[in-house]
Image (tube, rainbow over all chains, first blue to last red):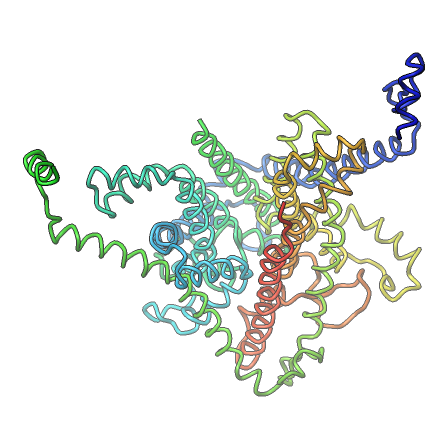
Length: 308
Length: 320
């Protein structure tokens, strides 16, 4: 070490003494650079493969479903098997109805649950139990919530002796929405700076006033983003509805009767051997995908508002 | 001094007692949110109780034999869920084997400054939107577009590897292999999103240090960045496994729903979720109970995987 130091001091003209002073140039033929390029290529290929299904699904849904869009689609009932024409008006109305029922149940319960976890629970055991239960519920497969509501409501005919009903379907969907709403509300409220709460207490506001007039409005954006995403997800869910809301070939008849929804219509009609039904399945997919993509873009736009 | 202060403050401020109505409102609101928060726990408990109660009859008659026998015979009332359990495990694990490299590779591609930010955000947005597409729409697409398109590839696989039991049957439409591929499409966004967040959270100093000692970009990724993010990535993969196990619609529409056991991936199969979707509506008697039993097994499987996922994230996370 010392010898090299002295040597470099003695003949400072040469550059190869203390450091390896090769010019800093990029040699693409080096093994490490080749490997680097190879892995970059592979990861780019993987990214392309990951995006490809979305593009293909969108193209097919847009082309196959988009060309079937007409006024008739929105106003008519599905045709009898083997017949041509018809629409999916009843299923669209049904999807809206069932989703509204589930949102009316899941949003108040979920937002209040999130408020409790964030504002009151602290690190208490009860709070931990609730958040663990919420994580577990979020991981419960969607079909299980259908089985649950079937066992609890459909089989027991709890609603005026009715078995399958729009109400049962809405409840099954709300079980799926609940964990998402609680989680996003909780995380939104956690982002509200504590100074806001302290400021509100400082001017004499009660806890209730602080939470409802200061904290929740401050977190309105993440809460509404979460709500929109949860509703969009529920609108596309099929598994919990197959044996709770069932299906109906007719217009909705109150919320205590079986009801058609677009997702169940797609499932039922996709596996039918009739082209007219298959086409309606594509058309329903188009409407559903458009609704859900619009909701997702709305949620992203809402999310961007808060960052400004 | 102090008394003087107290005097002046007495003059400046008026003491206001909180009216009891306000206190009542405060306590009432707290109790209300507490009650609504407990709904989550109650629902979870109710699900467990409902499914457990429903499956008791089948448990009593079939016991643990249910897990290992593959008879599903409504006429003689003999039920065993082996085919469905096997299908659930095989489809979910194989789909993850494909989706993990794809998802983590994509996540690296859109976090490690390989391409312009706008393009990165676009790919990220597209993967997120893929997650929003309903399962049933993917199933429809799988039936009419994907399965016919990949059938030649599967036939080639049968020709080349037909001598192994795993590809021994000729592909004829629905089967395990298309179901695995559609599951890949469904879990890919989950893995990508979680791996992306994990990679973004690796401290910049680690990257700078790695580049500072002269490694290449991929040297840094493999030796420094991925190890630092590995716990979250594994957690995400486990979550995706749970999702794949419980995934219902797309799989039901493309797996063929066969009740017979076949080792071949090109043959139709079944999963617990697709069996429930297909049979629950029309079942009665002990068949309902057998299906509830299968649902209980599915719940236990996903529960175990999800709890393990949380444990892994907490246990393996590196402290910087």
